[in-house]
Image (cartoon, rainbow, N blue to C red; front, side):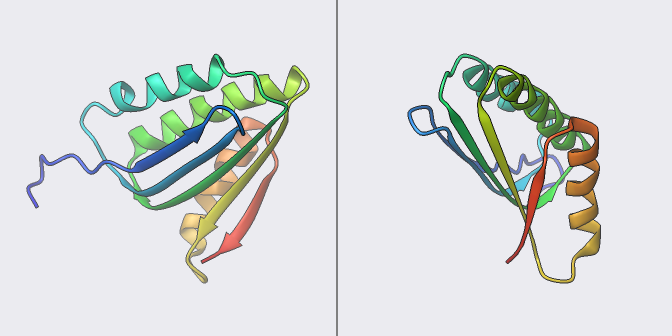
Length: 117
C-alpha cells in the first residue's frame, strides 16, 4: 500500500433506527470531504434514539477531529431530547485506544460505553 493511499472506513447509518456503525481503519487526505456529508445526514435526521458503534482499529488525527464534530452534532440531538448511546470498541489491553475514546467522551460531553473486542 502506498503512503498516499486513502484508507477508508466502513460507515453504515440507518436514519430510520438511528444506528450508526463506523468500522475498520480511517486515514485519508480529504477526511472532511468523506465525513462531513455523513455528519450532515445525522444533523438532518430526527429519531428518538441514536446508537453509535465505533469499531475503528486505527485512525488519524483528521478522523479524530471529524469524530469530535459528529459527537457535537449528537450532543445537540441529545439536548433536543434524543437518547444517544455511544459504544467505543477497543482490543482488550489497548489502553491507548481506550484513552482516545475517553478523550473524545470528555471533550464532547457524551457518555461512552467501552467494549473490549
